[in-house]
Image 1: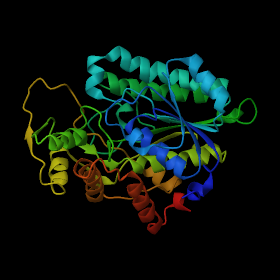
Image 2: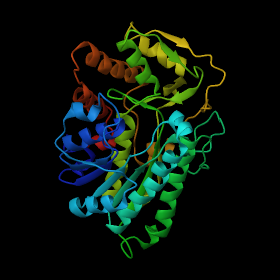
Image 3: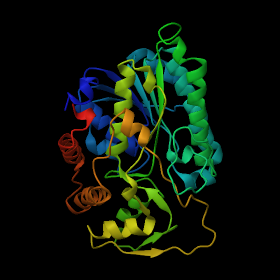
Image 4: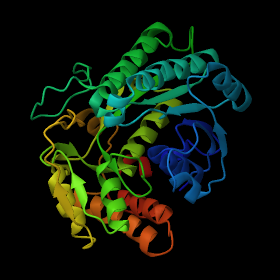
Length: 365
């Protein structure tokens, strides 16, 4: 596994913000498996159970707030990371309605302070993770491209749009590509992905999590927005994209210091109700009902990404189709709840890499 991504991560010091979260924990596992020296910086684990704790990784774990610039600087000065993956965020749409101030403070000012710590400590490569919701959603039937307008209806979505604008500003103001290796030595990219699923997510108000928790408690799950269409993909799909971009930045390829979309093929964009029917095929205990509350908070009905840029320039493709994604996700939770907290994460990663190699994807070489 250490030869993946041309072996670029072996012995590199990689700082991951938000490592105690769902996506961050999967990224830390993959990085440690490739021989990276991983330093995590995040608030306490947001849920119990928690995926990172199940993994018990050999890494440095620092509990801190990304809004604390002094502590960020102390961490950067001590560990001197080669690359930073910034994932820390308030990631939930519905919670952003309840607490907009914390959402903006974390997702906007927190990102600003991470970028400033990177600037002050001369970090070589930065991969900032935002969201497909950063785009101004016009309910188009086609996917958004990286140069489409940023925006956002709800506090969470607009905060992610703001974070992307921040990245663009820092790239222009401090990490200008025309000045690379003259006045600075930093390359920065922004990555946007759609809905991700997979084992180890226990965050509130997420469809798969709600389903799995309900099953574990022998309850019927209540489904809101059944006809909303989303690009569903396994968490490993965008992570392979983030790591591919990080590789290019570490290789000092300035043309990759840009924005990138990572999403599934069109067949991965299906409605919420279709998702529930799909996962039910793999665990017959699942039962659901449609929430007909007329006062449900606004969420986008149709949102998809155009990933042509990543397909062509990074030779990045998704590995698992939607059926395989749902199968692997349900199998993970089924093992956890029915086999005494069994954790299939490493097995899933190995399976994913094996199929990617069969498909001869560039990052496997």
